[in-house]
Length: 75
Image (cartoon, helix red, strand yellow):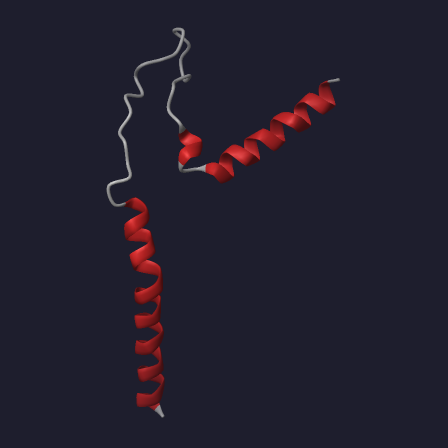
């Protein structure tokens, strides 16, 4: 019984490795571009031309919804 559980655990770990790891490696391998964050736009601190939404689309959508909510509440 113990060896059966161990075999099932090994199969589960292998399945995770086969499906999850190749996609995460191909997602990040060679796709990063390094940006100089010290350059600011118009001299404003914290404002730059880094396309964060390229990789972090879910945060861009979240912030866009929050902006719309604030605009609706302020009118």
